[in-house]
Length: 118
Image (tube, rainbow, N blue to C red):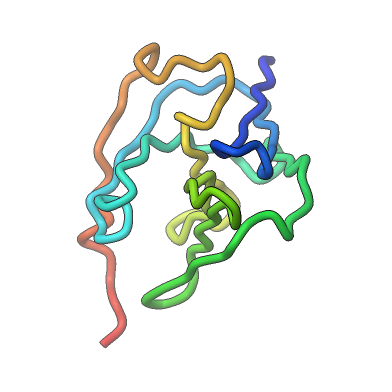
């Protein structure tokens, strides 16, 4: 089983992901459209934060279920805890060292269709 290391641009946020990455997703919700990330779906047990959690900023919006994490220093989106599957993280595949996002298919997710608070 492969293990990938990952980081933000400045290296303050570091993490590891264990397991095969067989596909990536893009999402059309208002946040994901703007951050334009390709995300690998990773079970929480296969994700390990190797930096202190105080290196990331938490951003939540709408129903405040999903937790989006960005580097406090360089601002790069690194990963998020998924709203639709709270036991999974969406990891920014562009942050993974030695992983080629073009090596696996990317499928669209219809986050724009998820409910929003009034």
